[in-house]
Image 1 (tube, rainbow, N blue to C red):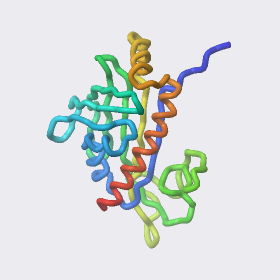
Image 2 (image 1 turned 90 degrees about the vertical axis):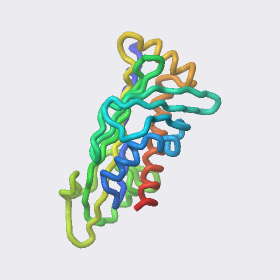
Image 3 (image 1 turned 45 degrees about the vertical axis):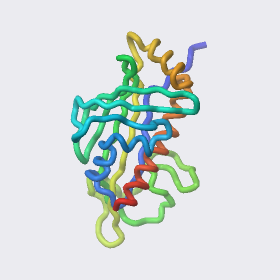
Length: 206
């Protein structure tokens, strides 16, 4: 019997009503904030100044009794649009994390959503699809009852492929206590928690 194909990417999104893409980008690009939002990241060391492509920082992580650090390099930093960075350990590529920021405007309907794409307040939903009439970039319905905001999309892609990938997977098991399959579930839950905390902080600052 053929083995199960390993999932190598994840995508999660949340809508943040009333938030500007530039403001949300600023929160995410201040990578030290990850220590407050992520359920695994406990802190970040980063040099001063606005991050740009090529900037580096170090993440300090913990899950239960497991403690590990990662070295990170920014690969894309476009204010108001995207922030993407690669994560590695001991010189081996591990993953690429990214955040995209898309403005939206939509009519103030009663679709039962809690602001997270495809997920309703009771936790049910398909996890895909957009409310009718919404278009990125503020091209949706306007006028009385309209509301605008930003959709933040977080992505994760496994870079543990090719030469050295087996050793990188082994290091992941040893230092984080998670198999590749378990890592998918942990990352998905962590992404949802991170986005929810980001949205909460953005609302408090609005």
